Image (tube, rainbow, N blue to C red; front, side, top):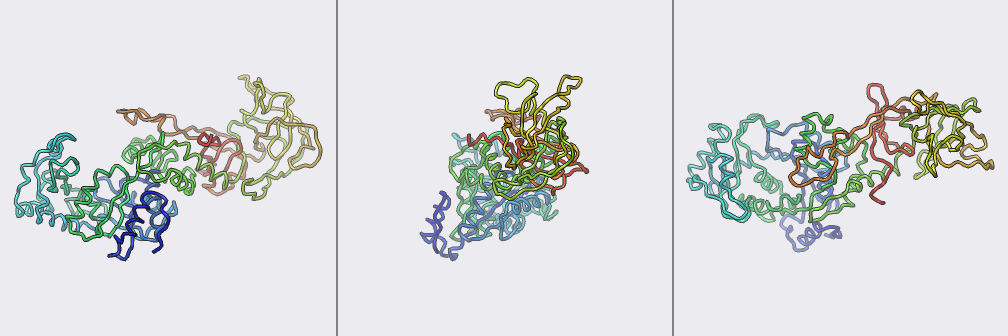
Length: 548
């Protein structure tokens, strides 16, 4: 087997293991998995985990299981399963089989009984609070449970009675018997099973005891024959426990190997399903797929290309050490992708009427679709009465002002150079309409010589054909960096969505929903239709702070 050149430390480990013949007993066949819990929608942090796991699948030509680690029935649902499957497919990843931890409930129970029979587990009557109190600290050992020395026969009897539903929630648990003095607190007799009279979304009411994640996860890996369990760094201290559960279950070598990598952390970005669910439940956002959410479905709804997310993760790389990535780097990847692939169009966010007094009639002008890809031009209509953005005109311009002012010249993009001759003011003293002269010889693309020079080029929308649009702009949900002991609610940006109304080319209204556009001099926006109205939602700004 010719090994690919390692591009990160994980692939380096895999190559070393393959060269050492670790997987010869199973024909050198690697098997990896992506194992989210279906208790919420996946977020951008999961994209990195997917890129790593699916990257191994692609680099080594092996298989990958998409597994739902569904061991907490109180929080899990098919809605989340379906959203995870949709997110994986939208990103362009292909898994070989969809499996569930709940598929293995019978086998997990049998293994738990094996632990009891081998003297590696016992039924404990301490409450959850008492177990926590007796676990000890990082510097002090834990206290042995008074139920730790129950006989194998008694433990087996009590565990079967737990399974039969003879006890209420919290009355008893099954604990691993490891070492209450271990320097690794995770090894101090962790709970394996707890009683929970809760209906499971897949198994119904068949079970009233459910396995804990720290037990079910490694054993599920071993049941499936996973060779590499690739997970984020917070599970590093759980690795000895992972190995203990697999070894004591009696699985032969080669057993799964857990390898940890640094999780993705992004400035001003909430990266916790628990907190994201709270935002949804409290109505702070419109749902898991709100465009402000860092969930994969939120990013999709916002108009972010999946290729941009994968490029971002590739640029961040695979590291062992904790770090925080500037959100501007993500914006830059999105911007680069859209700059190459999005069509150009025109819209004005704060419409100001501009009338060309010496123009009559109507004509079609050429407007370049995408100068990066050189995809040609489309036609736009010009009638001499247009809207420009109010920010492109000033009654009292500062020095070196390059937009329109009274007596000044600008070019209307893909049209003509115009000069502002007069301004009609409204009751508030603000400009209400501009009256301009155009110069026929300055038509865009014309070869006629002219001495007329414009200081700038501005976008516009024809007044006759332009359409009303709702414009939505977004800011991060978190307004600042996190400080020690600060509650996330203190960081929330309660003004993260801005809605205004403008004018846009009819081409935008006629385009398919979800089509991304670069609105000239404004930003990248996605077009949508809601209740018969055209909505333009910001994907990312034009300004690139990261590369600067």
